[in-house]
Length: 247
Image 1 (cartoon, rainbow, N blue to C red):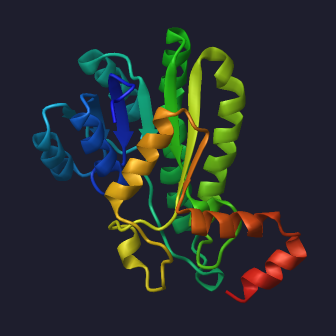
Image 2: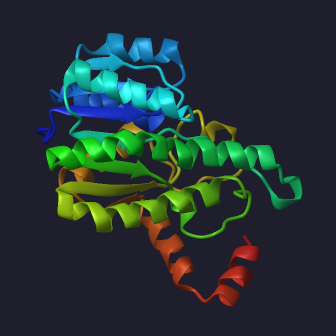
């Protein structure tokens, strides 16, 4: 696939989907800034391809995110594509409810995206172009068992993407929402339950890039899991709660 972007910024790029996206973009000739908290893993990624620039970053630190955005622009130029992918997964049943885990989930999965959007949106509006990809999850479609910390944070990202798509399209900015299912990553390796239709990070990255290149609003996969969960989303609340309660 020939890339439609000259520059990109990928957060959460040290492992999994983010790493796969960075490598595929770089191989297509895109200059890619990669961010994550792991300096060592980012260094390895940068050494893997000359088009990759490592910018270590904790996305929950608002001032640091703004500084990283400035550095990227100064180094590789205006950002054509930003894939806001940093995330954490804390499995949590209601009986194990822990406010600290909830706060961490919201801080990384939602506020981390907001921190990046704060400098990205004005820069793209001034340029009259750009693409923002917000990575949420199919877990954000409805409340699911064991996801008391995770699902609400991803539901917030889905809602935010809708708002931004509506408001930014008139400014020439494409907003895309990425809702993956289960992907083999360090994040999902802690799960002790069956993960239907789980896929490799490279496959997930390919699907995301194809959708982004077409300017799709929602890029969700695998279709079997997406269809099932979207049907559950259409159910009346009383019926859904009975069905989900049996899961």
